Figure 1 (cartoon, rainbow, N blue to C red):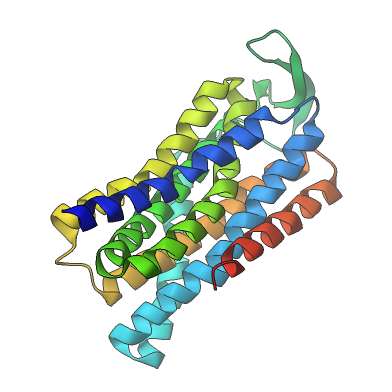
Figure 2 (tube, helix red, strand yellow; figure 1 turned 45 degrees about the horizontal axis):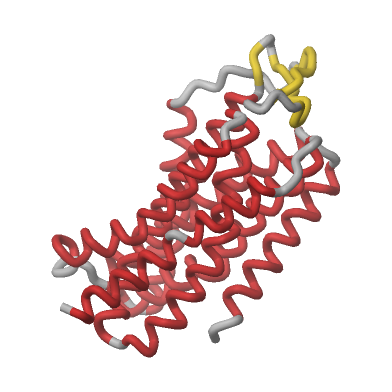
Length: 279
């Protein structure tokens, strides 16, 4: 029983690190759209790097173990693009209220304290806050899906080998911090509510301990390398699609072109360092 509690607490610690990232983002000074452009670019860099360098590789390794090198490689690629197509279909089914090519005026965004935070373009007479909110929700969904199997993996390693589980949990916690930034920034700018931004970030992190609980109670007998690999590859595709379709276009829309790229590179560097720390 103690080993189960230890494994669960490790998973909870790793998952709730998204809340730390959210707090860092929300306590930062946001007086114009430059911060938003850099932060959204940073978020895209985090998601693209972790998807292509970590999640995709883990998925391929698992599927090669299950199917052999050639078949496993093909299934990994198919699952990766399958994740992209899945989130593209979901995105298509949710109507977009604005046309990004027809910006007519600028709306000043006032937060709940009565202070001006930034100016946001209004498209076809409808606020681009809707687009930012959709971006934040999709990001929270992607991070939550990504964290679910991570939570299961952390929990299982905690049960089997605590000495290995500790560095895994710390590594996941560190790279969950910028993921918390990825979720909270667009939601805060869309709603003006720090509470909502933190709540979405917090909930996306909770999927890790939820993954641990469900894995322990229900899924553990059915989880194998094949299922794990497909889920991870699809999550990688989902996160890359969201970065290219939502985060980067939004970053360029609300700031200078180079700011979004600087943020993207910074996000990749921070994520790379976080993954290298516990090798």
